Amino acid sequence: MDYINCKNCEGEITEDSDFCPHCGVLLRGVGTLRCDTHPQRISSGVCVICRKVVCIECSKVVKGRTLCHDHEKVEIRQDWALAFQSTEIGDSELVKAVLESEGFQIQVQNFNSVGFVWDGGGDSPISRSNISKPAKVFVPIPEYIEAVGVIEDWNSSQTAEEAEQ
Image (cartoon, rainbow, N blue to C red; front, side, top):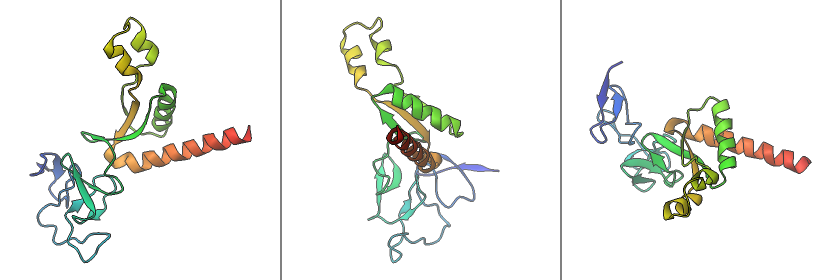
């Protein structure tokens, strides 16, 4: 398959793509696409997370990426979306394990435990600042919605188990 670069973000796309999956910009030759919410309006792009076709009113461009209003607050780093975060390292480790067991690719950030920060770190501004930094679990953008669903199902099952005890 031949790839070209998106003229908006320089991300790699296939020659037959209708939109760039990295930034959500519509590509030439697509024709006139209509907003999924407002069919009377011409679309301005595609949400990179849910692939919803959006008009200017229904979208927000965040750091060069088109997002719908449902996903405009999702933290995105490169082509990864934040699926879970917690200042409780144990919770983040559990979510990471659940997602990995379901076959998701994972990238993590700030996964050092507080104990590790303090071991040899002493009482310094850097050590103190790491205590409140959340451990973050990222998944590839196209897997975000499914990953969040898996996390919600897992949380529901945990809550049900706790209620039974």
